[in-house]
Amino acid sequence: MDYGKKALAAHQKLAGKIEMSTKASLDSREKLSLYYTPGVAAVSSLLAKKPQLARDYTWLGNSVAVISDGSAVLGLGDIGPYGALPVMEGKAMIFKDFAGIDAIPIVLNVHQPEQIIQAVSAIAPSFGGINLEDIAAPECFEIENQLQKSLPIPVFHDDQHGTAIVVLAGLLNACQLTGRTLNSSKIVISGVGAAGVATARLLKKSAPKATILAVDSQGLLYRGRAGQNPVKKRLLASRVVSSSAGGNLAQALESADIFVGVSKGGIVSPPMVASMSKDPIVIAMANPSPEILPDDAKLGGAAIVATGRSDLPNQINNALAFPGIFRGALDNKVKKITDAHKIAAAKVIAGLVARPTPDCIIPTVLDKRLVPAIARVIT
Image (cartoon, rainbow, N blue to C red; front, side, top):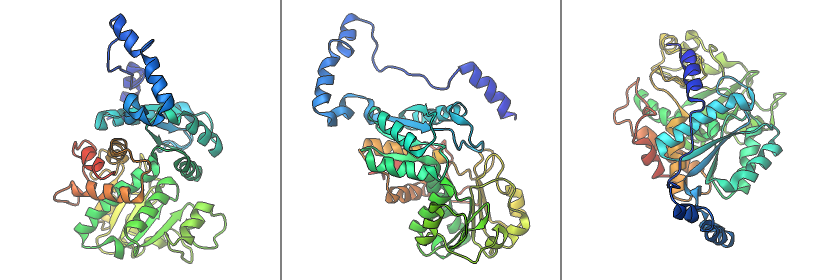
């Protein structure tokens, strides 16, 4: 099916995928006086004196801003705010349909970290949570870190943490099926941007004895390699990823148990998979074309293959995690999403698959159990 052509027609017909609705109608003078002037003055005066009550009198308890500068959109790259807007609208749809959360898409026409931090900080009082999206690395790390420190509401960069949570969830079941543990596994991550860095960190937090190698466009990360940004240097210094003598992706994959791809399509071949350990796990999430297609990975001996695509088994998709994460954070007045929350969410997601199989290591994004189950552990 030509989804591109159909999507263009559908979006043009709708002229935007979301709209605002009200919880009460303004069909009488009494209601207009109650919800606007003069009645609203009493509410405004109360909240001016006691801003901590805003969640009880406004939409703060059920609202999230979905914010991007359009610098790293899907598999499209730096396409700017207008290119990002349809994606942010889609994210808002997922928030509403899956978790009942009112989400507002906001695209920024600024790109420097300090500009984005300033803009988000300025609008933050209007929302109960901030979902950052499609902001390029390494800037995204500084932006999220500074906002988490300064804002009294949850700030969550979904490209980082949503990906990491769902990868961990899938690997918990995949390791069970292949008779291995994460702690004893050699894991190779291709791509050291937002998703790759967060995934490496969460996997190491969950399985501290695992050996993790990270590969970027220049090859394996290792101490002393020229041209590595501060984020990559910190991954090595903190021993999240292991330092090596260098090498490329093919060399890194030799005897590896697990491959996690968040880079670009077509970079892994069947012989490279064949060089991995027995019954390897391949998670190839590049979009729209994965690092290796499932049939090719299985040709190389992969026992379990997952991708980011909805038309293939085992879709590793952020939408499995972020609606429940924010539902729990808003309901339980959580101010910061921690590593403990992320690991708990991953275990919940994995646990929803009662009997994992090679073609079913993860629930579908349409599973209605996901949001309430995840929300319960975000406390």
